[in-house]
Image 1 (cartoon, rainbow, N blue to C red):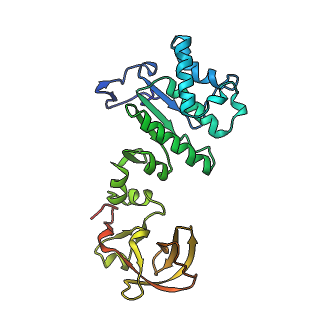
Image 2 (image 1 turned 120 degrees about the horizontal axis):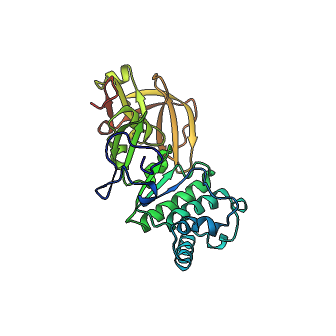
Image 3 (image 1 turned 180 degrees about the horizontal axis):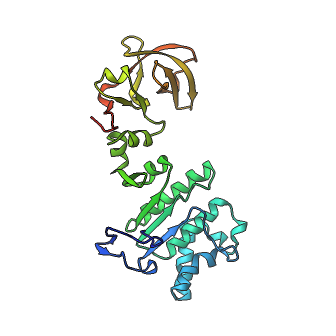
Length: 286
C-alpha cells in the first residue's frame, strides 16, 4: 500500500502530513529493495543502478555522479561494468540497494532484503544497511523482516504484526522489557522468553509466567525451583542450560561462558522477581 502496489481501501497514508492515497507510485518519492534483488540480467551494474534516473530524464552527468557516489558508499564501485550473473548474492543485494539510493527517495521500503543471504553475509549487509540508515538520517526506512535480531539491531521503532493486526509498536528496548502480549514476549528476544503455566505460574498469581534466560540464576542455596540439566549449549561467551523443572518445556538459563554444568546435574534456580512477566488467560500482561 505504501508503494502503491495495492490500493488503500480505508484510512489515510500521509507523507510529511500530505495525503498520498491517490498519488501515483512514481510521484510518491519511494524506492523499494526487493527480497529477490529484481535486477535486469542483461544490464550492467551501472545501468541497473542508473535505470530509474534515465526514466526520469535526468542528465548524464548527474546520473554518473549519483551512481558512482552510491556505488562507493556500498563498496561496489569496482563492479559497475559487471552483469548480475557475475556477482555474489551479497553484491547483487548491494546493487539493488544502490539502485534505490540514486533515486534520492523520501522513503526506502526494504522487503526482507537479507533472507536470501548466508549467515555471514547477512551480518555484513545488516551493518551496511545500519550505516546507510545513519548516513541518510533524513530518509524514512520501512523494513519488513521475520528475523527479530534484524528488527532489534536496525530499528528505531518496531511494529509487530500478527495476522494483519498491530500487536505492539515501540522501541526495541520497550518491546523487550515491556511486551504487551504473550505473542510479543515470545517473538522478541533470543533465546525466546521462558513461559511457565500450572503450579509455577499459580505461585505468582497468573495464568502464564514469563522469564528471560538472563533473569534466571543458578542458586543451590536458596532455590525457588529444582531441576535437572537436560541439555547444555556452550556459545563461548555464554552458556545456555536447559533445565527440566517439571514444566511443559525445559527452562533456558543463561550463564557465564566459564561455567560448565554437565548434562544430568541437579541444580536449583531462582528467578529475579523484578524481571518476571505475568500474563492472564488471554495473554495480556497483569
